[in-house]
Length: 113
Length: 114
Image 1 (cartoon, each protein chain N blue to C red):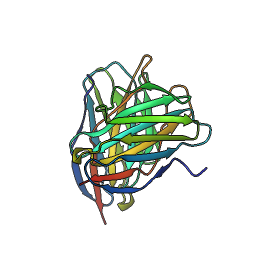
Image 2 (image 1 turned 60 degrees about the vertical axis):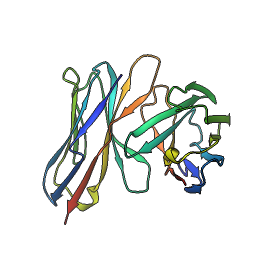
Image 3 (image 1 turned 90 degrees about the horizontal axis):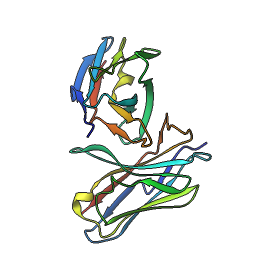
Image 4 (image 1 turned 30 degrees about the vertical axis):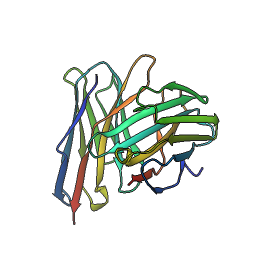
């Protein structure tokens, strides 16, 4: 059974700092990995998706990497801003005929002005 | 498009009562997902539909939970009878592509069972 772990559970940084969020998964037979953002009281918004054949994806100040063989992904946020404060979740999708997403419990990020 | 619409946004009920959560997916999306989020267990997939047909319901916790999708624009998740441990945020999401590359989430229904 796939398990997804995110460390740390919570992170507080001053504005402007670069930071890294970590995600690990136990079964490397994945189809892709996604990073989501969740704001309080709201649903999830997809930030970046990395296919299993890719090593990284970038969007603006965000960069996600994937090391499938070691079962790890990181989300790098450059020059953090207070507006980046949210919970960040990673999710892996199993291949084959089942398209189920397995989520980590998330990292609560607070960026202090 | 208005995005995925869920109702109600908040529900408070007493143990033993029936609860019905509603979802309207984005028009044209033929995959619909129901998730439950708790502090203890995180976000879990309960069931998903393709073209109104349930494909995988292995995440449905027990027989008290049931889900239907009578047409492409409407789905319900019903809990009968409800129990305090069902208290959670329930999300509906929809997707248009065959490989469900991106799922669009609704704002969720926060359920409290007393």
